[in-house]
Length: 159
Image (cartoon, rainbow, N blue to C red; front, side, top):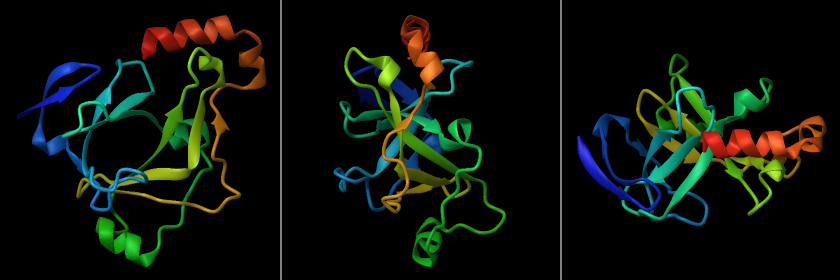
């Protein structure tokens, strides 16, 4: 176990076996390479993607398949090699969530720059996909956005 400091959750004990390493960092954060995924609550699909050595750097993430079961990405041979992905490896694809201040009903998922993780090696890479892939995929349908107070209650309770 190791202790990490976070600005949102204070001091946390995390198992070194749960660390994810992004050898190339993330877009805008190339030097930040180690992260841990923190669960919000048992019944919540959202998670926090917390940097190990940067207490203030954390993103809300979600498995893209929970939003779009048809979503898939083509990883280059170079990317496959970097992540050491084999045909039998479990791979997780996550999207970073953006929640505009004071407007949780307008939250979106970034499908254009997903985080791809080989769960066997615990290595990840942020891909940059074609412009035709949504940068801002809405989390709520128009019907749900018509009654934003319900979404706000759910979001506040779970995040």
